[in-house]
Image (cartoon, rainbow, N blue to C red; front, top):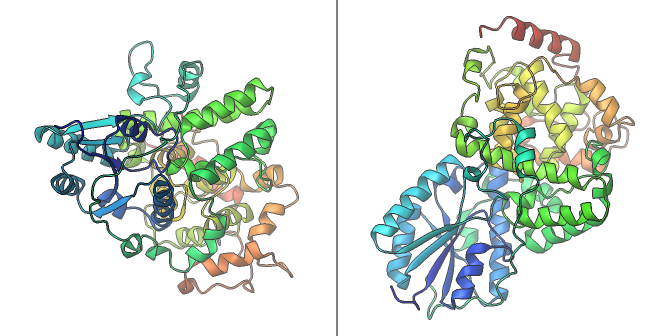
Amino acid sequence: MSDTSPIIVWIRRDLRLSDHATLHEAGKSGRPVIPVFIRDHTVDQLGAAPKWRLGLGLGCFGEALAEKGSRLILRAGPAREVLDALIDETGAGAVWWQRAYDPASVERDTAVKSALKDREIDARSFAGHLLFEPWTVETKQGGFYKVYTPFWRAVCDRDVPEPLPAPSKLAAPESWPESDALDDWGLGDAMRRGAAVVEPYVQLGERAAQARLGAFTSGKIADYDKGRNLVAEDGCSTLSENLALGEISPAQCWHAAMRAKDAGKEGAETWAKELVWREFAYHLLWHTPHLAESNWREEWAAFPWNEDERRKEVIAWKRARTGIPFVDAALREMYVTGRMHNRARMIVASYLTKHLMCHWKIGMDWFEDCLIDWDPASNALGWQWSAGSGPDATPYFRVFNPITQREKFDPDKVYVDRWIAEGQSNPPKTALSYFDAIPESWAMTPDDAYPEPIVSAEDGRKAALDAYQNRDF
């Protein structure tokens, strides 16, 4: 391998220039750098909203690379075949990338690294998507953590390296390999008319993410302990969209939180704990990959959840017509903005899995289709936590009451009125936008009468507790 041969930097969920260990090291080498994104099966299997948001992120990242005199090469196909072809075309002697931790990516990356080494190609993977590599956090007995609080105590005082600067320059190859056109990929096709509704709520790219972080840590983070639960207020960072695609790194967020904490802002540590909850989700997904596919607690396989998505209760839930205002408002927020407030996510998930007695995978898969901030680990852990089948889960007998939760966290019905048009004489644009985002086949209008509850808070709680008490395990 020549020291002047190009380095292929395989881009995945790391659409940023700063604190990007792979690009940083490649830039320092002085060798030509060829950034490549591969549309393989892991991309094709994405739901409508995350795939659309990925397309926007790739376009923005390509522009950022162009400002450095570089390019983002787009290729489609199995990763190993694409990389082999690019090596042959460019004479590259190295392929470097940042690690992913979901089972499909781990399987792919392991096979790719082995094949590249067989070709005597320098294949390297770098950290960067997490604060702590999952295998580096162990209990005193040498195993992995299954409960969040001890996990937090194990990592809260660890050193997190300072974020790396963006490369000042990325050397270009003598000639660039051909690239697919991003528009030809049609990554947003499944969004249909919903794309125009959601797009104004997107904060796209690294610059927007950094601005979000700066605004949050200089202001709202101080009251985060309280503000994060008030669904009608803008009390959260809303950075999950950018973290999901690596438009900002967790280390950048962590250090900003620590600076805010040192400045005496009381909510900073609570926000840092939320960053570590994301770490905990990946820690569990790495050590127990079945988290994303089946009940983490195997005994829950015997629980009598409904798994029929054709049932009227499931259809009503998906269409945000359950008759429970807090639940419906939260789902409509997701259809209009591509995101959902975290407190609302818990209520929505609890209602589906407990009041409606539906399998958590129905909700997990639906969120995967609808969220622009979809994250494989956080989505899986969140749903299993809510259902009671996961690690460190809320007990099944803890059933969130969506009526009292609304009274506590949306006492003036600001959130509900923001997203539900039916019954209002002059509904806001946010509520009306729901009808522009949903499929026309749903045949819904703002003039429809708001439905009675498909399952009341009281009846749903009783049914859930009866099922729990009569379980076979």
